[in-house]
Length: 121
Image (cartoon, rainbow, N blue to C red; front, side, top):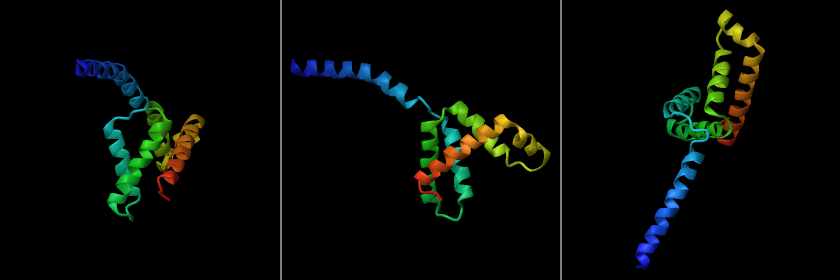
């Protein structure tokens, strides 16, 4: 009889705990493809280092960014950040727009801090 009660208690705990864990894990969850894309870009930008080392370090960076920034904010700010490096008139439009500058600056700051914490110089 005690085994039956124990299993019921564990099942009840699971029913209560699962939604809480699920909600917490998805608070700032990014689609896998976006995480992978970030890691590939990061590895490419740090190509002078061993690929396996950069896989872990770049994954650390995107995880750190995801902890601090919602996915929608990430899309906006990273787009502004990368678009500001476009040469010529097209990039100038982004570089001259004050809201885009703020978004790019926020992303640059967060990314820089994450890189530092993940040992990417």
